[in-house]
Image (cartoon, rainbow, N blue to C red; front, top):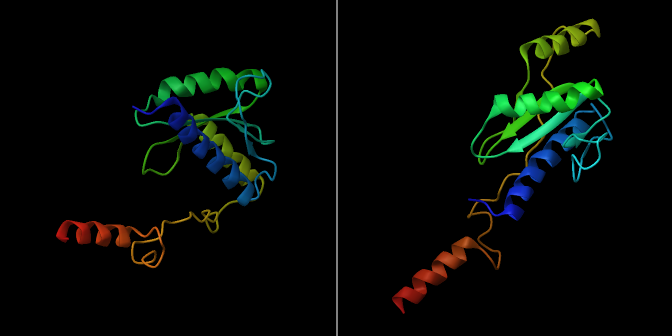
Length: 155
C-alpha cells in the first residue's frame, strides 16, 4: 500500500501530465494542475483549463471508473462543463473515460469546425530513462554498483 505522500505524488504526476499535454498541443496555454482541488467550490477540478471540460484524474492501481465518472459528472454539471475522467496506473499510459454521447458531441463540434480528417495530433514526447549502458561512466552508475558488489563478494 502506498504511503499518503506517495499516493499524492502519483496523482500529481498524472495531473501535471494532463495539463502539460493540453498546453503542448495548443489546446489551452494556461492549463495547470489545480493544487488542493475541491477546496474552492468554483475550482473543483484536478486540472484547471479554460476549455468547457471538467477533468478529474485518478492514478491508482485499482479502478472504479463508473463510480468515479458519476462523481466527476456531479461536479461538472453545476459548472456547465463536460465531465472527463482521466485514469492511469503504474506502467500504463493515461486513458480517458467519458460518456459515449459526450464523445460524439466532441467529434461533432470538431467536424463543424472543419476537422474531417488528417494527421493525428502529435503525441507529446515522453522523457525516457537512460539505459545502464548509457550511464556506465556516471559515479552513481548501476553498472558500477553491480561491479562493486561482485568485487566485494569475491574479495
